[in-house]
Image 1: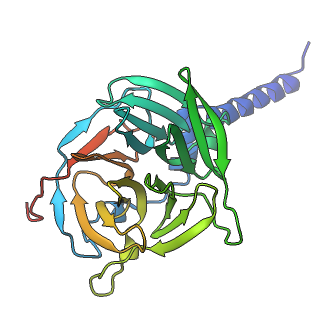
Image 2 (image 1 turned 90 degrees about the vertical axis):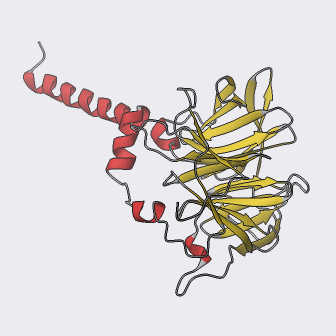
Length: 300
């Protein structure tokens, strides 16, 4: 017969194992570990409308589109016009291919087989280019994925090459489809690489600012090219910037209303599509749609 001491020790061991499983593999456990114990309050910056530069126009939310329940915590978004398809990547390291109305999942995949806690928040952005999905984030490389018979698989990865070594981890990522050049955004810095990972250029966001302020206050959260123009979604002071993709000069600032922390941006001829960062325990805010042609007075 087992002693009380051995039974107690076994119970303690089982409890510890249960806690490890809880924190590593369950969404709520990841939330408790990452968002409750170590969260940093930046709501003052996310929600601030005290923009560091002049704003050219403001737009309200034209539409909010609900995402399928399987799509949790989107971190990046891209649109492929030839396929009429949206691609969404998530904080939980997943790929989703969605119909244009976001109502049906065409395909999906998990990018990493690590426990949820170890992959949570590692994927930030995506761009669909030449029938391949480029994925960026804190994963050590720019991963390239391809779909065959509805199954996604990683086919290659790009690291920094050459004498000018840069960190390919990025909060935002976009490809200039006319050249294939890859744009990586971190804070207010944009780094440009070719398809082999060779350094091309590096510059910061620049625009005349208010007294004592700087355009560097706009933290890059998402990027997308449309008609050879680079658009930047800011994490702080919610805005979409039209940026010169050769030197970082900001041509225009569009304030977007109704969100506090944008995560990813896709641009079409008619609209800006924005996914919003949120916690695991919060209801999904869906995709926010902003018209590219409907300005709104800042006083409204």
